Length: 376
Image (cartoon, rainbow, N blue to C red; front, side):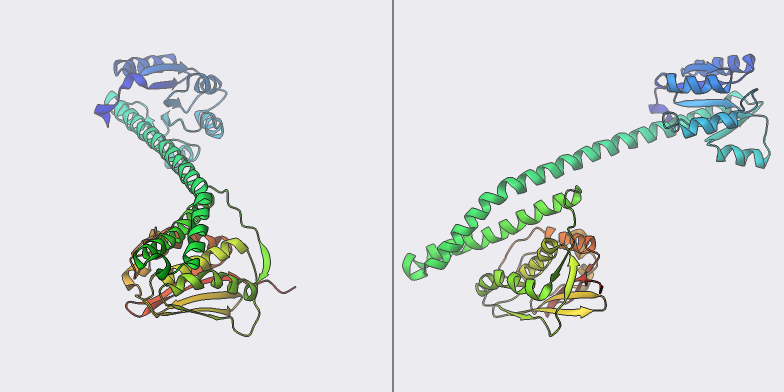
């Protein structure tokens, strides 16, 4: 680090009421090519720290009117000067003095009388830390800008493509439902049917991407409301009946006997359930069965989507919602892996959680838990 530091780029403020001490330090540090400014008391130190913005302060402890310790307290309480490191110059070296010095903001101590080698070593150590901190701050700023630009790009992509994709999806749905292989030929029908399925997947991805971006940037707020899951779930299941039929999969909806009212964001919860059902279809085999089950679980409502599809290996389950892994479905359906991350985020935002149980080769059960409405 030392070899890469251009010392002339860094300024050191020397503060001591003894003129000879100031001159000695100034000579030594000037020879080391540092920029130097000086002050003879605490008040002048505070003024110079604000006007000169030094990179390091060498501050004498024993000064009239205001001690170095008291000066340091003022410097550290001011946002303009709080980050400037301070090396105390002192003849005091008792443990209590050292402890007090560090409490008021010392980065290091230099005990009088000092020698040149120790002075330069301690100064360079603090300057090296300043350099490292500035590099980190610059990288953090660049990272924040990169993330901000990425999120803006995601939002623009999802928002601008979502509407035309919805129109294409609707037209393809209508066309597939109004024609048959006999009418247009099996090859053309197969191509249109595939385009229809891919439009469903793309529209779902864009919807997830838009919501995820808004959630990550704090532009998606949770709107709490009371609603009955027994009324909401059948409508969600109906959306996927036709999609499931393309793989000859049966959707069973078991709402139980108890009506469960939750307090949550309706749209967010629907998004979670839709993603779970879509994934269950994706990873189920032909002629499979998917059960959508609603039950009370303590003070939570649990919505479980159980399939008898390909299942997930145990080593992947732990990081499933964090890493956003994606694999192809049983008919090579592609996914982004974004849906599960979104499900976790939405469930937690609503005071709930998501869970998964799976056996490789036997199937999986994905569940979302959401708080029930509290009794009045």
